[in-house]
Length: 227
Image (cartoon, rainbow, N blue to C red; front, side, top):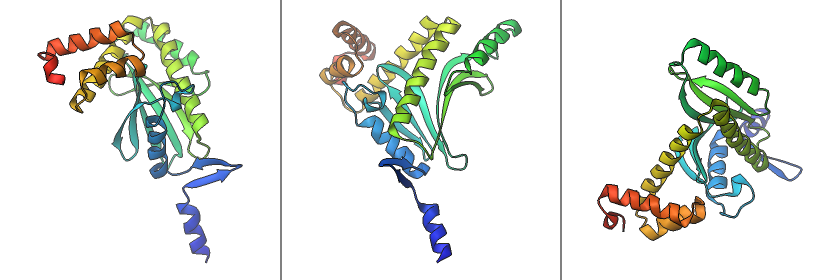
């Protein structure tokens, strides 16, 4: 009986406290997070309730992109550590900076590590600047996840301004947006559906949407390819 009780406790993946549902296993958490992000409305007040672009990387990681600020966010889960980590790279290689510039950047980022939730780190051999938000699996709920998304996106804006790379990062976002459109083209979307997506979901003006589509179509050999 005792072993059975331990097995039940070990396998428990959903805990309800005061009517709030908490997920406690990566196998249950990541699909739930994906559902939260996919099933949304373009007039939602909270980030988590907006329709995000979501793809599954592996059993422990998914990629999420907010169409109105298309930075790539990786959401990973670790059962052993008991955390969910949201991370995004600024695509800035600090290893190539000279010593003085590198010290200036690191000092600014370290001072910003006092901000709640968002932490800065260096990833890979190139020491890529990366922002991270760690959340406890045991207490993760939709509201907390929404706050983490908001803090991460705000942290990106703050870091980009601090580093003076607004123009560079805007180009990164535009390339990511183009990749999203290409993905939907591969899924069989026609020009009208792509146009509505850019205007209603991404939030571009009608003129901006037309410019992007005209540019893509002309490069790929004409609108007929996409209709």
